[in-house]
Image (spheres, rainbow, N blue to C red):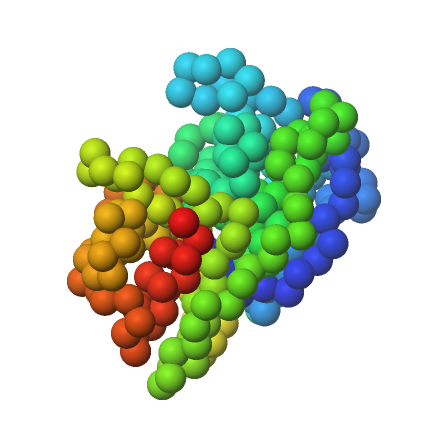
Length: 240
């Protein structure tokens, strides 16, 4: 899935019904757009759905994606877990029209990537259908941590995701960080975690996790160092 984007305004409650709209030119609402694609949701297609045997555990709507160069369309369904809407970040799942899983992507509510907007639309539609706010945007925008010297890639932390947790049976500090690849014009996410004991002694190991909690990478690091990873560790430990 492409993560290039042009942010388009989310359109409230247009997907938040269980019935289908008639096939008219106004049956679709544009959710987000990239340099190569336009993503639209089908009005009135949104509804609660069963996930892994749990009733009403997710929210689903029908989408179409237009390839601008080929002038062709593909169709499918977007599904998000309601727990993810509450948490503010997690996985966005793609199904075919029969409900068969075809792929997944990471998304953050109120973010700017294609996946962010597709997932946020599902959560916003669910909120509008219930009249409640599952996860409010509290003004804690992404905070730039460091810019890589050569690539100019940008690493940023989302302050309202900072939390104390247990990792490997030990107290730790964790937060969500984004990596903006300037050349590719993409954004990816990782959760970073470091033991509080390592923060206190000034050196140790910092790890990146995917949204399932599995370790992607781990790095030996010393605080107050000159590297990108040292700057990330410094910022994370200062949030304790």
